[in-house]
Length: 203
View (tube, rainbow, N blue to C red):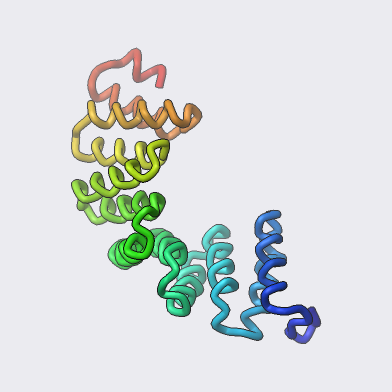
């Protein structure tokens, strides 16, 4: 690579190098490589997608949304990009927009458990709790050991005041992931509401 913003390796090689830097958690190098690719090829899908992910993970959601929006415009058939874009839109509280992209991800890849779980989160944020439960159920059907989906299902039951069902979900979550602190905490809240105080203290 030269200092004038020109690639001295192929875009494919630069993309591989950016992905390797990202995997090694050298996000600054990965970002530099992505920006160099985009300076030479403004619609390079992999660079847009990876840079968008980096910006989301480094707490720059507006920039992440702009990049991932461009990525899905370049590759409207890419389920993971739609899911990533939905996640950033959710971070920006744009839940209706996020839902559209989770739906698109699932149209493209019906077995995409993470998109089903994330879709449930957008529906819950929109107050559509029964639909959120159905989306979490779908995620669990696709991935029976999906601890986060069980947890989110429990939180939604909690929102509905269905505490026994919430407890069942929290218990299942903790069987799958014993160190899930939020599940312990919410389990304690539900147990306290049910006046099971000694159990609540242990949670």
